[in-house]
Length: 469
Image (tube, rainbow, N blue to C red; front, top):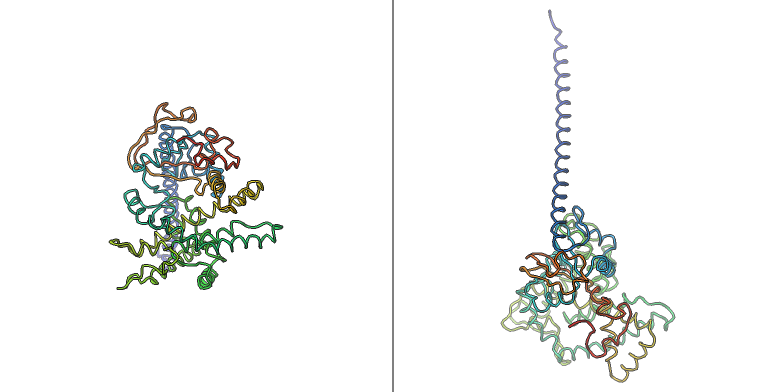
């Protein structure tokens, strides 16, 4: 039999095509199986980690049940990052003064017992290092400044800035602020049309407090025409059209706080959203401003100028004091970190305090009138009580944390108020464990503060608190 020449190649090509399709199907099916197995393996690993974590959590004390991937962080997501004050109070009321939770797969213990906090913050502070969770969240914004640096460097670093807070320097600084304070008060009256319209206190205080802390830290007036022109020119290219540096700093902090919710998933390194780009541009603007202040002092030149001020008012900004330290050498990056840290510490705390104090006094005409009458006489004892009571009700940082440098033991000082404790006498905490505390929950503890939700400044009348010593 003789085959046609054209039929042989045709049959071979059809056979080859069928084989190729079959191979592709096998490959695709195998790939799907592998992906499903990998996903199942990851899920099983998460479940195993969470079950182990749950056993570890409940081995110390009870608390919210962890879920895969996020631990117990979903409880914060439900309340929102803006409601940290309420979230801390809610969990304390649900789980008691001491309970365990999980930051992703990280074991954490929360305690609001004053005796435990005294141990963590005062008597045994060397055993509780700066929180690596806070360092991870705020490190990109603040660097290794005074707030985030470890205990081994903190005490030495703190002593370098003591002169900046001396009575002489603070007195000189107070003289500088008189005109700004008057402008701030006049601005509130003008914005309210003589008290007939509501005023955005947060916006007003953000502006004045950043101006104040900018002067104290860098010797710079951030409300000058030059600074504002640079701000508007830089941030107009982003989605953050900031009117002043106080608003810029607020947005930087707000963006940074959201990063806490993502923990190890540092998506902003790869996904450059409009918010991420605005953050980077705003942060770079502040770094350039700090560099300009350093260059104005001649840092890096043979004849450095430690201060921009003539000292006639008795005040020197912190940057000048840092540059002028004898036998001390700071890198440019180190100075940037310290400057950003002081901008953060001074601005956020002061904005919170002024805003809430004015709000609380405005809602209580009798207390407001007493403050006015005492200030006119040159007295400020009741104003001091009002400020302390405001900080009690609305602390600037509703929650803080520490990382245990070595093993420690918490005595069950208030066992009846820690119903989820597994051991009746003491709790053993391992090295590396995170310890958190909800400050606002401690400040509103009814056992230590009568009528904890009421604004009662006179509880500080004798310059002591009613909380246990």
